[in-house]
Length: 278
Image (cartoon, rainbow, N blue to C red; front, top):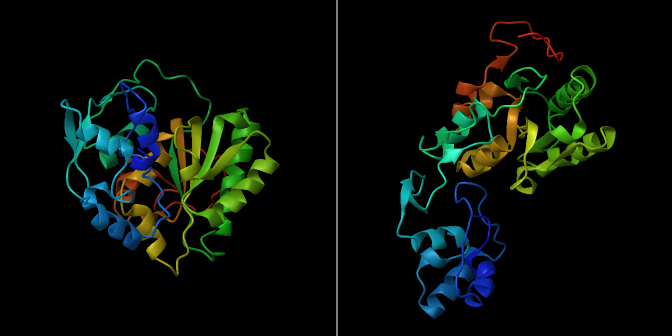
C-alpha cells in the first residue's frame, strides 16, 4: 500500500506468479516527482491519471486485478480491496473500533477477544492539553505530558521501554521524541510514517500542530490513512496527547474523540499529573 507502482514493476515482470499483500487504507506512497511532471509523462505515453504514482499504489493496482474482494468507503469514491483479510487479531478495544470506523467502514471482525494479554497500565485515554504556545508544530506542554506518562509507565507500572511507541504526525515533534528516546533507552518513536508495519503494546500519540497554522491539522485529517496507522500500531493501550477541543473538529479525529475518554474529564480538575486514577 505504500509502494508506488513503478517500485514493484521490476519484481513483477521477473515473476511467473506474484502475490501482492498490503493495505490501501494505511500510509500511501510518498512521491517526490512534481504532479505536473507526472501528468506530462502520462500524456506522452497515453496513460490515464489512474496510473499516476501520486494517485495510486502497487496494492491498489493489484487489487483491481483481483476478481474476489469488496468495496471500502473512501473520500475519493469506494476502493476495491482484493481478498480482504477481515478478521483483526491484534488491537483490543477501543483501538479496534476506532480503526474499523475511520478506515474500514465497519467491515472488520473483532478477533482479539480471548487473546488479550494482561497489561498493568490504565485504560486508553485522550489527555487534553489546552491550546498553548508552540515552537513550530511542537507544543512544549504536550512534550512535558509525554515525559510524565513515560516515567509512570516505566517506573510505576514497571513496563519495559521496548513496549512503548511514541508517534506524531509532525517532524518538529519527532525531534523532541528523539530526545525522549535518549532519555529512556530502548524507547522507540518518530513520525507516523516511520511506524508502518511496526507495533507495540502501548502507543503514545503526540498530536502537536501549530495553532496559528490550521492547515497542518487539515493535512493530517484529510484522509484516514495517517490516523489509522498511528492508532493501529497499539496492541493494548493508546494515549493521545493534544488539544481535544481543536482536533475533534476535524474528520477522523472526531471518531477518536468519541471513543477515547478525555482526561481530565470536562469540568474536572486541570491537573494533568500522570498517572491519575480515572
